[in-house]
Length: 307
Image (cartoon, rainbow, N blue to C red; front, side, top):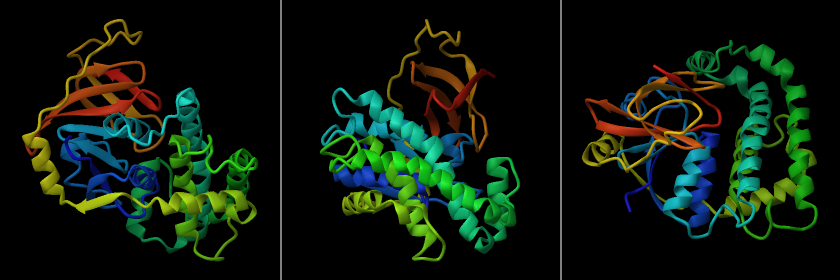
């Protein structure tokens, strides 16, 4: 099997969601550290403009958004499955709820605590990324409300663990656990020890659960440079994909389309449609540094349009 190549940076919370997955499955993977702000010169040739972190590369196939990355990891490394039989939809739905609700509330808590300590370049980048001004004073004022919202959402997970189960859906970790570890880990590593009140202060079950997740580690990473990853893509051929010609979108194989996140980092990626199913879209594009690659996105959370 072609290597998993993860383009990430150490403090990226969504990257931790993937790294802990590698840990649970004890997988070997290539680690390409990218900047936490733009520009990202060794990533853009692969993604065509998609700027969120992380990005998963498998040869000349580029996977954007962790909801899709996790499914690809599961497909290529099915041992220690993260989609329990009979609970596949439940695991994916809980993960999406966490990504779209708990994570952003937790971001409000963290940025309220550390926003005024971050470099100006980071603040400028995140203003462009989110489409609204990164105002440290406003974030600090909003932190108490964000803290209560984070606690209210995390309380649902705390209640799931109260019957003594070790993980959210039962005896073994699932996709839901990997997703929840993202904001919990972010709160733990960025809030410090007692610097500011944390929602986790009132959630002992989540704290104990997080220790189990941390113990999985991050698998077996090997450093790789950005140019080396581009060379891998250039030497590889994208995997075969198919377009459902009955898809209600009306989009057809070979048509030039754009794919854009619907929340933040709204940079459209354009290319020829080569894959379309109920839950993913794949477009072929080329770049002088990598040749032809196929960039894959989930349908949920992305807007498709004829270009």
